[in-house]
Length: 251
Image (cartoon, rainbow, N blue to C red; front, top):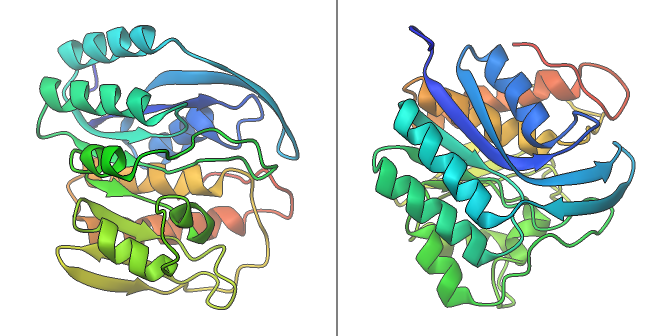
């Protein structure tokens, strides 16, 4: 067992390209000097350019793994990625909080792939809000947050409404006008996070990297604002690391 590094857990999909999912999360965790554990919600067939298929992991198998890990390790924070349904997510979140109420949960709200493969459909706003009450932070972009509401409100209005249930980091990478500016809704306040450099390169799995960097920083004892700021610095270096869709990890 790690004597000095806090334990963090990713519960997400396996992307064989290593750009997203648990492989990307573990790379990010290692760079932040936290010890990463991983549970797979699904095995995918994909590259950085195209998503082909997914085979979901049986929920009972995931839950049994969660039990074993929490009985063995003191896990400070958990990042959750792709899931097939809200019920699947609810069962995982409920079990984590039952095993360890103080563990922070971050949900990277990946509802579809960039090639339009649908992972999760939000069918009940009531069920969504019941789940969010047990999650500490969600990290949607401007496309994803619109799918978390059944209204015609703006992304900012939806983020503010959802922040009544958990903290919300509204990522600015897909904003049509303010690209790269994130807004963190936490403790009834809104913090504006501005990029320190001009980013011209996109990366496969950048959302996974950002949420896992936040998870690592939270496990290291930082609050949500500082964790988000440090994660933003990390993701900017990642996006600038090369000109391909597969980025390099370094602090």
